[in-house]
Length: 286
Image 1: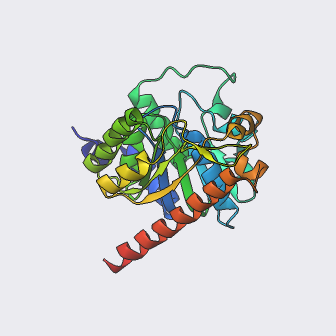
Image 2 (image 1 turned 120 degrees about the vertical axis):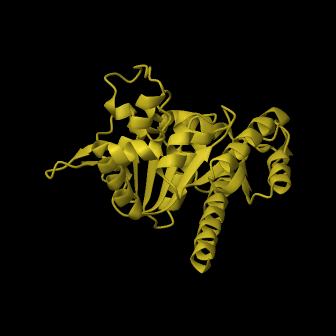
């Protein structure tokens, strides 16, 4: 029995599906940040991108579906953030700012270091609940921070949010590019449109001479985007302050707004806005 048949025969699943559709109607663009490779900076990118969008006077939701390693609350400085429990019984996400709110498994765990030992069905159920049980309200963008790989979490997002896009993250070295190609092929197989590719850790600006040092090579992501016919949305440099600001819960785009790295995130933000709006216009014409 496939998922469609189950949803027809199971009234609980059917009711959930209806709630999910209603929630998603209020969200203009849904973007899943993903990569076949771990350690490429997906959470850092998701967080700084979300803040960048919110600073453009857009309403943004950040959904952390990395259930085994939920780092978003820590990196936003909101490990003790509480869900908004309202008088009408609905639950709202945690607010970072008036324009940005997020949801993660972290606020629901008994301890900060509690392990989530779940298999596929439980993970699928949790991600669906993050959508239909949370009152996200009207959003311009929902940024979804996914764990590495092409497993249950990515499949659940692709199946639950049929109009979602993928934003693929890589670093320049060949090992990363190989894994990212697998992510791209995953997206093609599940009909998940790729809105663009980002090259993270793309060179480092020397703080002394201002020249670029190619620690992990440079340009591999741009070449891959060209090879796979995917929009290339930008390069984010290596910056030690990304680590320190993430650990301190003060993302770099907010902590050092005049830095070269913050400029790179702002450029990525505007490029993403351009391609999503262009894609939406194209779909309307079709």
